[in-house]
Image (cartoon, rainbow, N blue to C red; front, side, top):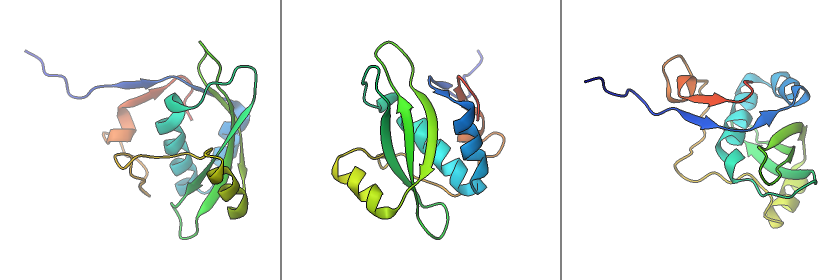
Length: 132
């Protein structure tokens, strides 16, 4: 009998080419951390048909926090699409925090500064509809 080595998790969302370029333009540690955060919360984003939404986040992958804003659409019966990413100031992040529009990670989804390697949890077990 063959044993299953891991359970593959398929996360359904799309990323626009422009969004991918914005991630690539960031320092690798920050870009990876933001991509990982988005991957973790994509299925929990609020649905609001026909409206662009914004959600703020913070990456602590470097010595200084990097505050950012993600623009996306998430409509009923469609997968979310992420299309823009901006750096923002801490005051702007706090405004989004007060409104409850921030990326929230639970304690099981701890951030890491390590980039995944072949065979690691994030290196092979997650597949996206559009790789970045």
